[in-house]
Image (cartoon, rainbow over all chains, first blue to last red; front, side, top):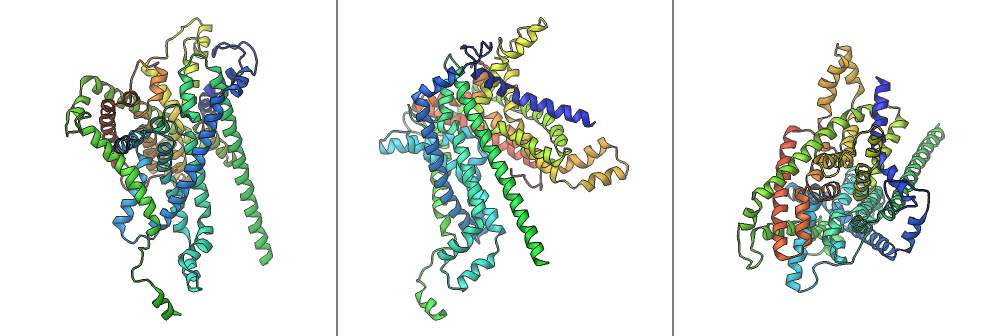
Length: 275
Length: 286
């Protein structure tokens, strides 16, 4: 039974990674083919360096991800604090359900709906339908629910008496928020921001629908590359992205394991001090 | 002190939830309004702006209905196969040592961090008529078997891309399950299979439901997977929407809006049906 389950797991993982392995292999191909390996070369990586558009697309992607994550985190955190203070159940539930819509709706419907809004607005204002700002607005919109949903539980877990104590000791509500509440919910805010950042990096459909001509992010640039004849340079770009993700994931895993170990070390230290 | 505070307090006070106001304004402007505009463009004539049902009626032509049905069919098959593969896999993972478990979950999540375009394209490369699979089959004198351009390739693409979304919620429910329940069942004379069927499975319904939702919704609305793995010969509803929208004319926008409107309703209905099965079960948030 145990061997069977091991073989099954290994098989699924093999199938999951086979295409990726093939992609990495052929990014080093010296020929133009993506099915016959002719020899090892780095020429497609060199080709990438020479491609100006990729630098531009990378810059756009990062700019969008940072801006949309920061703005969504600001709006979303304030929203989570406000929502947690709502007494009216109906109001609270309505706001929460509307917030969740971009998460539940398929991306393509969100994308079409945003485009329809921008189309209407541009016909009123006489401006271009799509630009950098329409993409930014769209990214903030699909990031918001993830920020709100990762901050809200932290607020719920927090001891309410702490804020009351701070106010009793003469803090204004704003001061008590920054001194007491904010440090307590910071982990939630950070994980929300990180989530928003990665979602924005990875988004293809919504960007594709709301972006203007000639504006590219990495995913939309890869999409345009899939329509060309020669592919190994696309494989090279994908391999670089894959390796970056791999390094980041391993680093964040090691970091969290390290922090966990340190935290447990601290607890052990405190216990021995008590004795 | 209290008296001084009382004097200082302004005559009207802001509501306690005021910090949510920017978010609420954002939601109205960029979530609610856009959905209303889908309805608006689905129900008005693109040239005159008059209210009309002809756009929606247009969508119910045999051509679109066939595509719509095909999308539902492929998404259902992909979801079912994902469930069949994912459930045993999640079970296998929960039976590993703790260290191996987190390793397996990391390996499962890694492909999710790679863009869908890249994943699909590398799968396409494998399936091509001169791709590695056919080269392998060729060693035995079989083929080349045309895989690309068939419905099978598209369903395979859906399964390949969305399998982790099914495994993770099921795993998270299974790993939190009380082990003693399983022991109790076998103490009371259940065979391992009966324990699985009567104890473990019913307790993991919430994970199954969120897995189904997380696979079905993106499967039915996909457009890149289908157009790429069939070279544009088999269209799904998402492909038609994308084609119409990318024409960027008022008329194509209203067709795209009508199709999105239908798709949205289709998904709402299926979410409603799915949730009926999981009544009173708490959803799992990843």
